Amino acid sequence: MEEHIDLFKKILTKIDDKVDYADIRAGKGNNTSIIMKDNQIQEINTGLSTVARIRVLNNGAWGFASTNDFSKLEEISEKAIKISNSLTGDIELAECEIVEDNVKTDRKISVSDVTIEDKKELIQEANKASNVGKVVSTTVSYSDGESQTAFVSSEGSEILVDSSRVALALNAVASNGELIQFNHGSLGGVKGFEILQDADIESFGRKIGEKATELLDAKPAPSGRFTIVADNNLTGVFIHEAVGHAVEADLVLQDDSILHDQMNKKIGTDIVNIYDDSSYKDGFGYYPYDVEGVKTRKNQIVKNGELVSFLTSRESAGKLGIPLTGNARSSVSDQPIVRMSNTFLEPGDLSFEELTEDIKDGI
Image 1 (cartoon, rainbow, N blue to C red):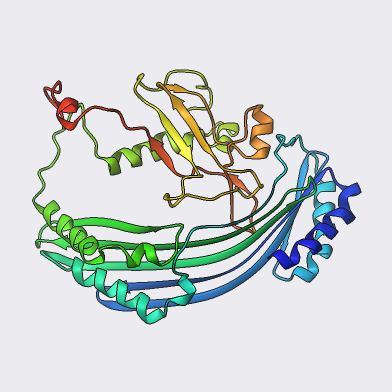
Image 2 (image 1 turned 90 degrees about the horizontal axis):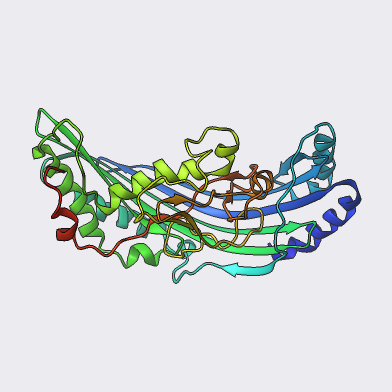
């Protein structure tokens, strides 16, 4: 994408006196997806994509246009300006650090250098291992993608990001003739193919199948109100759904969040500390810059039980008068929205025994 930077800058310079702000985001990439259902490969899809978009801010309103042909960027920039001029709004962007950077995410083995046959073998290994006990159906899905994106703004930011992602997911269904149980697992990250090649795929698949079978003999949870001790996976789901989405500032501004009026108020006990960290490289939600060119960082959402931050884009941070967090996200061809990244509940220092010793009646 570096070879197109001069073109993007030229277009932004040409329209600079017609707009209050403008940026161009462009990307190209390749991807593969493979699905195996009940021991049979059902789909193999590969693709290449190229897209560019421009958005302009004028009179407090956005104009947005996209194209698959970079030579038409200047043409669609005029369309974006016409759109913004036909609207009125109250958008004011939070100030953002001007950045020039070129980032390549970590990888040892490019997914483009791995054959489809090798990817199929990995899927087949996971599928075979999961067919244990009373498993009657399995679905294994593999996906990977490499992308090169560029972001250039009228304020002077120029950011290039070369990124790679890979993921493997497995669903297993077990049945004893009367009951059906389901288990799911996944592997992957913002890495190269090595993240799967170095994993114990046999163990990964087998454990998913074994758990689905074990659940057939699980006792129903008693009804009532109980103290619970949750494992990491369940805790992660709770934090994701109950807090993560609720602190996304676009939802807050729409009054669609239960936490919209809870800033600086207690929403948990003193031991609750929650973070969103898009700069965490080992998380699947890692990205070095958000789609508005804001450098990512670790953001504390809840401190000692008190709500201290929402997750923001430049627009939502401007409207709320709060700091930028680097959570504007979207595909290249879409308008940014605010979404969480890697969201964590900070661990405490109690052992499992200490967690349970005072619970007289719990789960």
